[in-house]
Image 1 (spheres, one colour):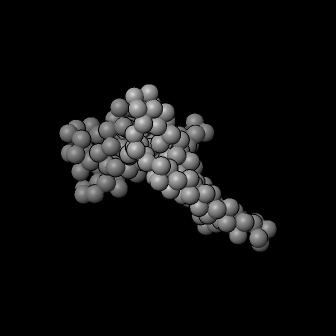
Image 2 (spheres, rainbow, N blue to C red; image 1 turned 90 degrees about the vertical axis):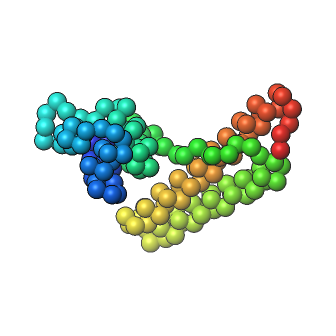
Length: 155
């Protein structure tokens, strides 16, 4: 899905009232917003700022993922709470290992038959994202600890 399709879907899938409801949520004129989303109108489109506003108002990250995919990158949520105790750090290490195991299992089971179906790939992809997110959460927590150590250890 490209970013234009993603923007269209985010708007029209918004509850309640689709694109009109999302326009109302963002405080923009529905008619103008609908024109920006319309792929049949030349020289229109959703600006980068509008795409960010849509993403945040809808809580729907399809535009972000489409943008990242187009640029051959991934978008993974940042952890909400960087503070970490020794026990929490150990828990994160174990979570990372469990997620890596789930990913390896998904790949191994999918390849047992000599190929990968679309459903199996969706499973592999989901497990891969979860493994990557676990690693990045661990990195974020360690980053906080490195910064916190300058002013005294927290945890």
